[in-house]
Each structure stands twice: as structure tokens, then as C-alpha cells.
Image 1: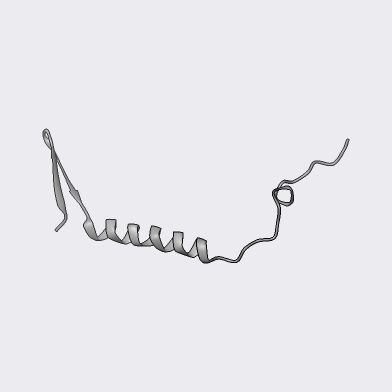
Image 2: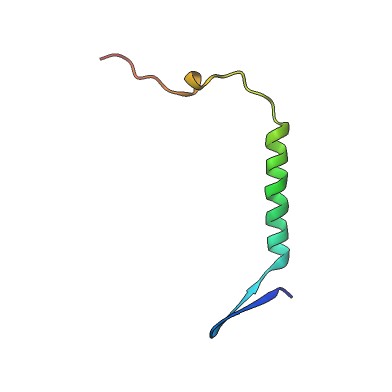
Length: 53
């Protein structure tokens, strides 16, 4: 069972398993980004240039 939050006349239930899974995915995505392959492209390479008229 999740946590219950009572706000005036409204009751909310937090799904702790879902929150833990999302936090774990967030940590894993951050760790994967740090371990990723370094790109040799520059900022100029990423910008599409428009041809002259």
C-alpha cells in the first residue's frame, strides 16, 4: 500500500513502487549519459546552415 496524503477533503494515494522505479530510471539514465561515447562534433556541426539566396 502506498502513502496516503489527506488534503482538506481530498485523499491521495502515492504509489511508492512507481516512484521508486521512476527514481531508479532517472539515476540510470544519468549514469548512462556520463558513460556515453564522447562526440567529436562541435556546436557549429549541430546547427543547420541556410544556403545563400
